[in-house]
Amino acid sequence: MIQIVIITIMSISYCHYLLRKIGTIMELTKNIHIINWINEIRELTSPDKVVWIDGSEEQLDELRNEGFATGEMIELNQEKLPGCTLHRSAVNDVARVEERTFICSRTQKDAGPTNNWMAPDKMYAKLKALYKGCMRGRTMYIIPYSMGVIGSPFAKYGIEITDSIYVVLSMAIMTRIGREVLDALGDSPGFIKGLHAKADLDPENRYITHFPEDNTIMSINSGYGGNVLLGKKCFALRIASVLGRREKWMAEHMLILGVETPQGETKYICAAFPSACGKTNLAMLVPPEIYRNKGYKVWCVGDDIAWLRVGKDGRLWAVNPEYGFFGVAPGTSEKSNPNALAATRKNTIFTNVVLNLDDNTVWWEDMDDNPPKNALNWKGEPWDPSAGEKGAHPNSRFTAPAKNCPCISPEFESPEGVPISAIVFGGRRAKTAPLVYQSRDWTHGVFVGSIMGSETTAAAAGKVGVVRRDPMAMLPFCGYNMGDYWQHWLDMGNYITNKPKIFNVNWFRTNDEGEFIWPGFGENMRVLEWILARCEDKVDAVECALGYLPKTEDICLDGTSVTQEDMAELLNVDKGLWRQELEEIKKFYSKIGDTVPAALAEELQKLESDLL
Ligand code: OXD
Ligand code: MN
Image (cartoon, rainbow, N blue to C red; front, side):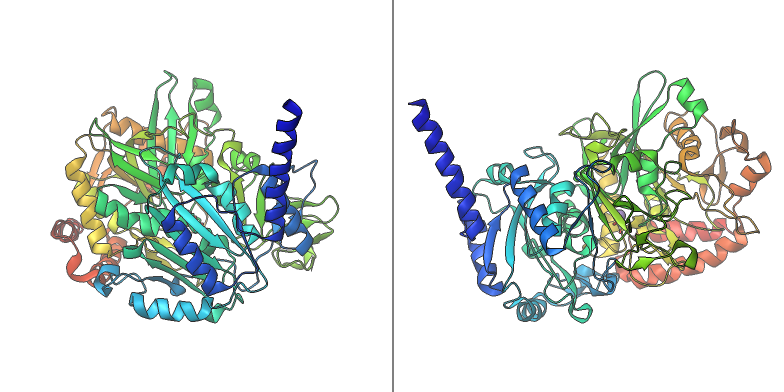
């Protein structure tokens, strides 16, 4: 009897395996909304084969091997970097393409002046022509995924269709994937449709498009993570920001960290910085020795995206809807972020970094002082480190499971999330913004977020190092009108009875020689300490035109080479520079136009008179 059962089970599994191999569609769900949509896309794109991703290690292994065979993935040294692989994107496809990213809401006003817009019908027609037959000769993979812990009150589900093994393997790290998602979804139509096709990787026909009213995302002609891992920026920020407004919650471009005090109490902070301004480093901060000796610890809940809801207790609660880190590799080192480096030591996909041919491992600028001598650069060309050209692309990445991180928070999988004490905004500013200041109240805090400006980085295609306004670090990620989004922030303040305090930080202030004054990295703990002390009314502050500044002696400098004079410079608010800044802010506010909430326009006037 037992033998018969075993033989039957083995034959069924073998049949499943064979069917998968020959490409027969083994539907993993009877959800008619999913099936109908997949049939529609199959007809449009004409793939040779359709594969449902069930989330099993066995299936992911098969795909990895297929990727090795075609060269889409490169296997790395399995002793030094177990489970790790390298992928190279096309040389013209290495960053998010904001000018080709569209919010196709029904009206242009709903997308607002900060988003590219096209009428849905027009964009659908354009895309349909591009997708027509584009998967001929390829396999179409169907990835059921969850943003947030499956079955939790925060969770939202998506199905991504893609023709890229790299996308499947990356989504398996960045999100929770597979059968369980379909089980949780049941017969519901409540999922976000995401269609990605590499097509010809043609930059002229590259589109990253969002249809908020249809819960649909369509991405074509790119293979770069930020454009094609549709759970991340496209769903968890652009579409989710629209859902959040409708359902009274918030989707934000924020890290979430917990600071554990020597008394064993943990307080949580969310922080929004523009892309590549150190969110991953702050989220995984290692406190300076004197703090460690006292018993302080920092726990990482998330490094890029926070979904925030008001809890029954009237506080704001946050979850990280992601399951992995898609971090910028250059600059990540044992010194700058040992936790991130440790997170990349297994089951990680590296993209566009240097391949060390001597031991089949990876390298990037500032990882250490020993660039490999026998190596290929991010394009796969022989690379000589002494020739002056960078080996890794400045926006090269690691895609690592969050659970690899030594300081991952014990609350990472908490279905309710963590209660937030402070919200921190920040950016890269050489001169204007002080090291830290606190807003006066929620409305003023929303104003502080709305006027954020930062020097641009390599995370998006375009010029690097120019100041651009990036409200709440959401400029490229807000899926609707920016003025309405600010109003939503103000409205949320009415629902949160026990509000987090709102701060602004700037680790990037430079002296006259152009050198950073603040040491940054782990030393930022000193600023977090002041922030949390302010949240608990344990420390005084001085009022200025921007809000509340620390007294220079209230930021602990023990064990650093930062002097009181440096601190005075770091906290200095140059009214002349701020008056110039004000003109830029006014221009930006007039670009947003009549949706700017009156309360924020009043804050702007108040700032202007305080700067006189
Ligand atoms: C990111 C980004 O990849 O912000 O997180 O560009
Ligand atoms: Mn980001």
